[in-house]
Amino acid sequence: MQEIADAGELQWHSAILFVFVASIALMLIFFFMSAMSVLITILFSLIASLALGAALYPYVDHFTGRKFANDVDVPVLGPMPSLVFILAPACAIVVFLWLVTKSWILNNVLAISLIIFFLTSIRLSSLTVATILMVLAFFYDIFWVFCSSSIFGKNVMVTVATGLDVPIKILVSRPNS
Image (cartoon, rainbow, N blue to C red; front, top):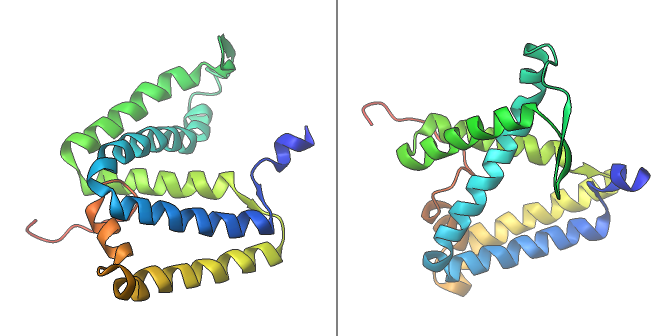
């Protein structure tokens, strides 16, 4: 049982690896954005649907008086609460509506769901790990935002952030738009 509790715990070596893998992923997206755009949109749509369901689950469960708390045994996946089968289509519809409309409100709902999902899934094992992660993330941002253009000819972070149309950023609507 302790292994399950420690599954989302970030150690110092994982923090270093996290920033390294994020840099590799950013470069791959930068160089192969047109080829990876559809794949990334599909992956983010699936993850956003899961994240929205995870964010809504406790509130819907409480609101329904835990009427759907009974588990249903699903082959391969194991026991799952029946509420998941109600939330999954609803979340998939929200993601589909975002894909079709690109609504800034739906974008923000999905982006905030992804943030909540990440923050509830990852635990830092110590203040040292948090410090390592924050310092590395600080230099990661500085390099990819300010220094990458001198090496790659373009600002990698800005190119990827503006080139991808996935709910990874909070949007603000402009008047008359």
